[in-house]
Length: 590
Image (tube, rainbow, N blue to C red; front, side, top):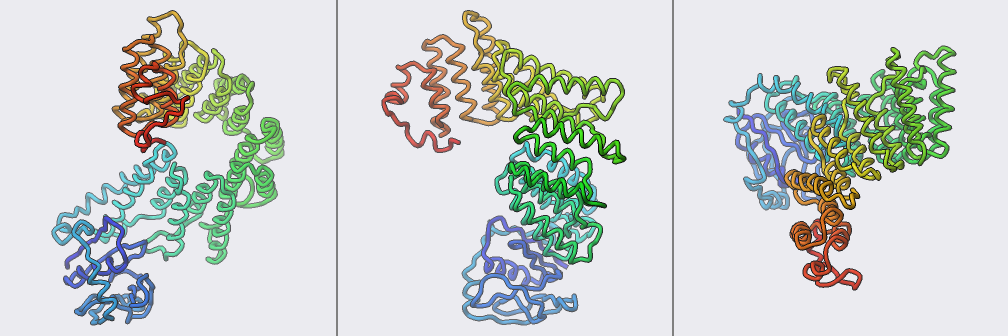
């Protein structure tokens, strides 16, 4: 039998979709499948066919065996949902609907046909061998989506590839299972996209609507990821709605173990309320878990989550210390899971971050953990979160010694990771951590900060896939804010770091207003005021104008660093006199 898989590249009306499907069906295909707006149209599907009437052009499902695709005539294999069989059917339709279909032209650019020749080339063994590779890649994307703005696009592409392999092979082993769907939703949970929580919930809704055959049914992990997606968007109300949907499904299906609500999903509610600064509500949920039994009883992560939540609020450090004492008491009373470990101390260090003079306390706590770990207490081994929390405490501690201290912390972190032979990923320096260190160094008063920043930048290349635009921005900022009056040789070495950074940034990201503006500041602070400086500033600024990325930051840096002669030549006047730049210069600016 011939098989064709139709893949639409553009948004199609329902009438267009049916027209395309009929074109294939009338070509005597025995297997036809089309997915439109989440609906699966196929003679082999358990989904009833869709009826289209002259008064309604939107889909409506029907279980009747007489429900037909409208067509001008001929035969189409029609699904009888009650029998699970197929038979030829004859049919007719109204003039109105026929006119709709005839006017719904679908061009070759809109529809891609994989005919029998394509199927002959389909390699089932290769598809099966590729499946675990795709799954591993999808898992990796789900774990790093918070750092990759393209993560959801990448994850969806992998999912589509897996689903197409299933459709073309009809091998149930290739059908995306619950693990695949959960990785896809987890990617949306932590992604940078504004609508990712809505997308995670939309996928959940599709899973709830199905019967578990073509689309996997949700489990507890699925709901937990969607609750977390709303927690990350500081929306406890939506997070609670998902928990209520979980409880309703659990009860309606006879309370199966795989859907039983537990402390894990309520920990995400604590997180949601904490991030929304609803500290009393977060504490109420935690106390409810402490008083519960079974799967709902507060676990170790419940303590960590409430410490993170309350630690970010008023008197956070005192509240975290009080919770640690309560936790130790519960441990002594027989709750073995309540022994404070690394994550608890991380929460305490994190609570220091909002206090201006607490950086040294955070640093002392980290060194105490290191001492206990070196004495044999593995439960106190610092991890990446420990170092991240300590570095964050230095963000408001911008004196000259801050940059040296955070660089030393990274050296210790790097040493711990190398002790494991590079096998413990929890100790691998992350892009977020190293960028935060770069930010602290760039904001410090250390005259050597450009050199320190370059060393940290090189570590990003060593331990991470590649620097991002923020990495380049902080490196340029460290150069631009370096003060080295009188030492011309030192200024030029610093300026060369900035030149190399901008060149690399442009090669990777193209024009960027933040990087351009910071480089122009470096020109103003590190080069003498002369024609050579003006020419360089002019080159960068006019490039930004041509690319339409001129925002207030870039414009102000240009005015501050350039001569009056250059401002008159480029702007036609001065900003303080009310000169306005063409809108075209900022058409792509953020």
